[in-house]
Length: 117
View 1 (cartoon, rainbow, N blue to C red):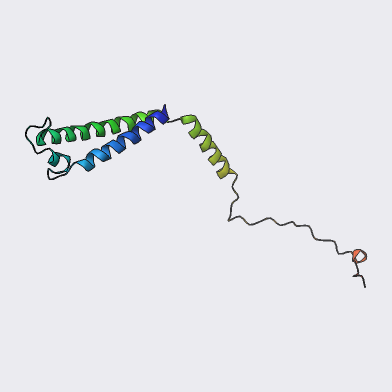
View 2 (spheres, rainbow, N blue to C red):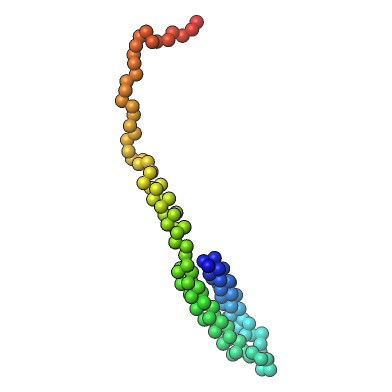
């Protein structure tokens, strides 16, 4: 379900981008192509349609975003969170002084090896 909502969000975003790019703030854009008065959608109706489409797509984007946040798969997030917590708890402290072995090596004279000639 989360994947479906994510796809719907992307489709809504692309449509919203296209609708906004078609508009022109000075009355041009797609509306400038319909200058004839015998058109089904005149200049004013085209601008109304683009404005209404922008508001509808913006509301749909908001709705899908809220709906998507409700369907986020929580179990996968908790698994990743516990894995991160394990890494943090098992991490080596870089400021800690390393512990070297305290045993001294044997200095037995009879155990010394002489180099072969």
